[in-house]
Image (cartoon, rainbow, N blue to C red):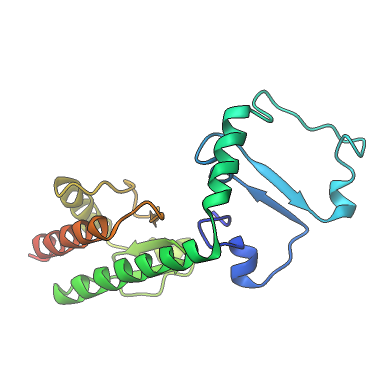
Length: 187
């Protein structure tokens, strides 16, 4: 998850790196099953039709995925990412406030529109530190959020994602669910 979820220029722009190759997944196809790659000329010119390496697949160039991707890419502007990041800032701050209010141990890691909520006060920097999270507390949180109408990934080790389609009302509803959930699981 280093593509467009991280930012307008993907992870490479966010972290200031210039890769030899860039691989992009579903977002470049508007969520449909597609992938794309690009890179430095001296590498890409080895791929057919310019070079001898043939690459193809059953869904390569699928018109539906290409059209969805093209239309999605037209919507992805620097200003849309600024708007998205403001929404994620608001959600992240609201989660922190609610967790602090109910003394819920937590660490939030974030890159662009992706964030991870871990039920630990320790810094989470790798899988070993992620495993220090309270999995029983996560299970209670997961069930309570679903009861409040907010459906999340069912694993402590998966992320929370926002998109430009989420509205202020969606964020309000989500933060209300977090407050109710944290109140419930703090007892």
